[in-house]
Length: 294
Image (cartoon, rainbow, N blue to C red; front, top):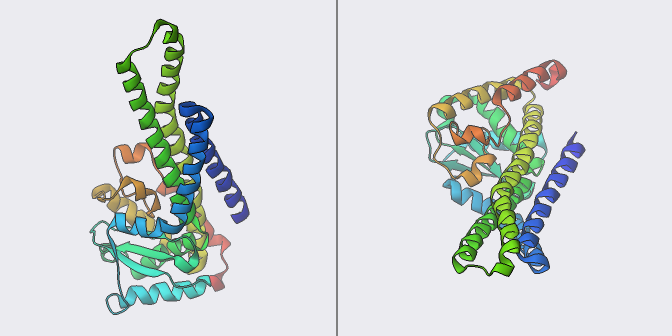
């Protein structure tokens, strides 16, 4: 299953990079495609090296010491041992909305961030289920993949904006009669890029995130040895997100365990699978796990 998920994600990322190159070619021909390729490589390298620090900074997370959060550090350490991975850094986000996310380009560079309000809603076992889910993301290197996808998706949206401005300036400058036919075709192409490119990028980004959430749920349940605490936690977190949506950047919303931008446009373009389906899958795992693991 893990190999299949990695294969699907590789194909999706290749598709997003290919879309980026197609837009570059449409805007500037071979030169535009070459420039888009350079940008794609630069963005992937930037996402590789700086995705964790950027995500933590954008979310307002602050690193906490063992003295500041002893129980949380102890929980992360114990679950990391069970997952056979290095203990990630621990961060807290000052927000009453309960939520959590993980970041880092590798298990050695991992970080887990939880909001200050999460412990007030969840039991200790439920919080352990959430932390185990985030450790599974780090172990599977989902955080790196999601960051690269978000970076390229943002660049595609930027190119679509450039197409829009290019059309506006071309219209203001006017065209000769000989150029009118080509200008109309270019305008139609520009409109299609402006509308379809961001939608295509978002669909690819959502497909990557959704497939990875199911894998992290299953991985977290295996780390904890029991899928039910995570299922219960997801139910509570979804309820809380619907009542008090979190004030956070849309660029990092796909990293959280549940969609922090619940309601309105957040439900139209969900980066997460339906929470009810995730809960059902976790509860179905109960009969599949040996009693010794629970």
